[in-house]
Amino acid sequence: MSCAKMLCQECATQWDGIWHCASCLGAKRGTRRQRSGAGSWIGAAFLSLMFLYLGARVMVWTSAFIAGLF
Image (cartoon, rainbow, N blue to C red; front, side, top):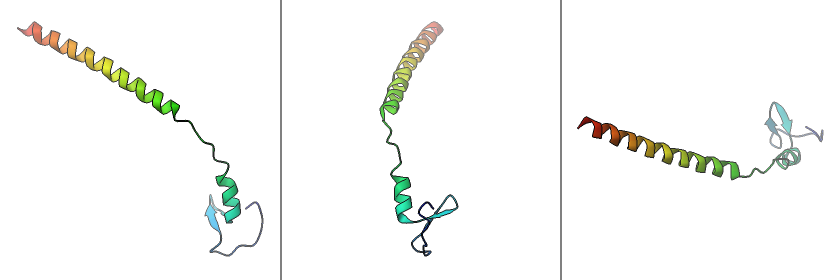
């Protein structure tokens, strides 16, 4: 706990084995970094294009294989 004030059991919260008051937890919560979702969108677009390409390759290969049987 960074403020070192006395707390009752109802006012404190244990986090990583250390008891913190509400103001200390609020300060820790405020240090959270916001992330951009651009990487997720780029990854999803890349996987979609990869599956589209591989699906087309499998369909062409399968049709050529079936045509060779007859």
